[in-house]
Image 1 (tube, rainbow, N blue to C red):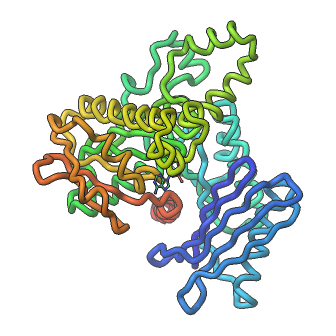
Image 2: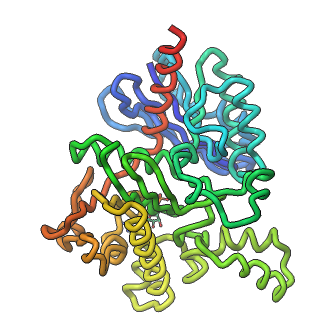
Image 3: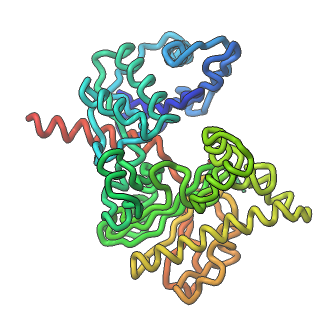
Length: 406
Ligand code: AMP
């Protein structure tokens, strides 16, 4: 029996199938360029001999319905005629759960309706998530489906952390508040840290740093999120690949007046043309580090700004938590860039955060401890696995509901 995880974006669908027993990965893939004549599907699966095999196929795919049918067809072909595995459940990543969803939800008509009502809060993401859910319900009508929300992990934030200092009516009438994102990743690495340290999660204070193309920091007190750097949308907080992060709100009005550009265009610039890309022209940290090494001043500035912002958040969240057991680096940059980890921890030894240069440089995969001997705070590098976390939460949700119904 398998659990399928679907992460449906506006022009792509990422998916992964796990064996229910032990949640080991059985197949995974990515369909890109939905809505074009040359949508490309890369499907990988674990063959009976234990190695990964791969098919890459290109064809016109008009929408998510055709996309998911394409994926199911190629997956069945990859099994080369062997009986299809029974599907225990489908877990859907949903970006925005607003205040309605504090935990995963079994998808029925009412839950789907509520996710649709939240579209104004996440117009770039929730419509694609909804499309994926609708099609999978049609294609697999007897399989239970569960929605896992990026925001749910942060619903434990107290009012002082989630409110903006705006007229209170903006919150009451329009839901303007901080929600936070990357919840599955922050939750997964917190659990992994607890397992690694042999301490129950509810006894741990952590600062988790998800540093990828999107980036966010979370303060976790006794296992629960009490503050996070992304806000009402994923635009707030750290410097990201193409998003600006924290910004004086007056900048929007000033730029609009000076350039005459409409707000919609400025919104696009803040999301897609800012961050690392805005400063040095590219958003890929590997490329930026190599340009900086070659003496490119803008690339060096981009790395410096990125790490400085991370360091500011570590300091702020230290103050929020009072004491910290571990700082955790994850995401493509957090897991792979020794330079970013080192520069983000620079000058923090007074807080007990000190990194061992050698340990930081040599990471062999899996969980690594990279703090110096004298560091009071553990510094961990933990590979994230959002799909696995979604699969786990999907299974837990179904078992919880079954337990309630028994
Ligand atoms: P993600 O969004 O989590 O997939 O992360 C993507 C980011 O990780 C990109 O900016 C990549 O350049 C960066 N990344 C991946 N590998 C490395 C590496 N070895 N060194 C620096 N950055 C890396």
